[in-house]
Length: 304
Image 1 (cartoon, rainbow, N blue to C red):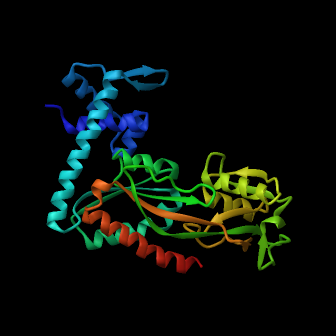
Image 2: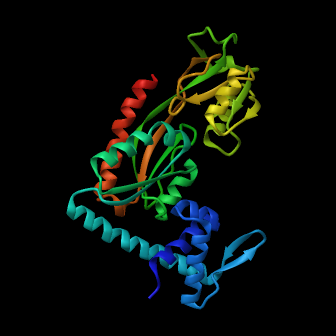
Image 3: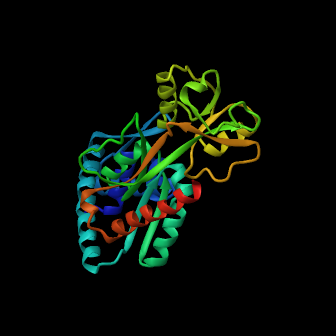
């Protein structure tokens, strides 16, 4: 009989595209994942991974086996959900994926409270790019994801994933102290022509929102500096190197030399919790979503 843990390792490599990424998602070392797949190759007497340059690729047989593994993992999840539902208490392991600022500004309190209320629940969180969240939930790599969207890029609602709104995260225009806009109560998008911008790299939702929104207002943005982390953007603004649009979640107190100015209309990104329909009955999912929504109410008040 094939070992489910080894099938899970192969499925993770199939989803994440590499042994290292699969190991990170599973909470293992890369060597442990490689060993699991080597044992599975011996079990099946089949080559499952082939070297491709510096990485590996799944063979045709491996892709078939990974698809079977996904079906088996879904069956196991349904059985675990039924048992947890009958007990009526959140138990077992709950894996959560969250984008960076949610992982920093929202999840610590939620995870701590889940641990206090439900000692039998083993929660595991990992940072996940928002655009990857839906697929990871649908494929069973995480049980619950926290994702976001903007008005220009609504969150897709594919078959096999359910969602609930957590809340709306407001964004502010951050400018250096002494900037001509620093003393304004609010500014409109048309007022931003000629500014040097500090933003996230291309391909991110935040970057695309900034470019498309400013162009719609008649301003071609000058993207002077690009940084993934909002704390890096804050440091660049504080140094007088440009302006930035930064959501409040996970931003923390503004450093010296930075002023927040309201942008009219206020840019908003909406936060969602995502899970698979088969797991919707899990008390752990219900408890986590309720805590996410409750925690958000406090976070939103404190950042206002």
